[in-house]
Image 1 (spheres, rainbow, N blue to C red):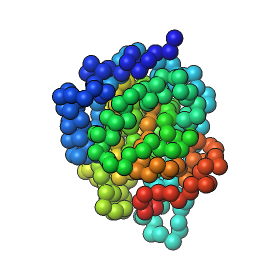
Image 2 (cartoon, rainbow, N blue to C red):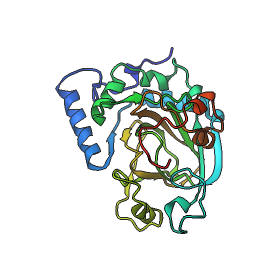
Image 3 (cartoon, rainbow, N blue to C red):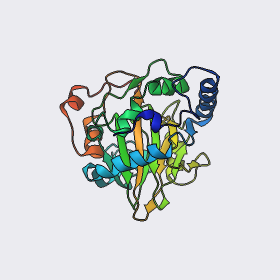
Length: 280
């Protein structure tokens, strides 16, 4: 029989579904981390059974991911020769990654069982302190698994969605460190500081080692970040739960094509429905 969420989440350590002092403490600690640099990690959020279940599910659909090898800038936009040569929008890097789209994960599977556990969304919202808080409406991207093999990893970029919640499932044999420049564009694009990060001259970059079972809350719309290059034969699996500020938001057709290799009618129907004016 499939496992239920209570067999996969360490609710003794993280009673996210029970109102009380312990939950309040966890929320306060997570808020403090997010306020400091836009990132918070709940170590050991999953029990071993949960890690194993997610790993098995990821393995079972690993051939359904969209593997891509291309060059991209931090904004997933095309090159613009009219911009200065050192503009970060003209900085392109090799990208090798593999996203297993959301429609590969059934409601009865462990990934969506965890996602749909009563109290999960509310806990995340409380930690983020967001009044407007919705699951990403994108049928290809509301909850996915990123599978990264040996290679260049995922170069510097900003997320399309405002809030990203991830569960580390399996690490590569070597590499795959999560690196980010906290809140680098909260008040604007801040191209000068982005350029420093891309050139390896910024003192704002933080390195984070995530272990299987760790839950991470991250404001990736505002913090430039990447997954460092990986090596070895073991793929890195990370589940990604996405939340946004508008109820009907989906990815742009261009972004969907890049990340998942396909576009659905809904992506054309809702193109342009965003809550900010950033270039991506």
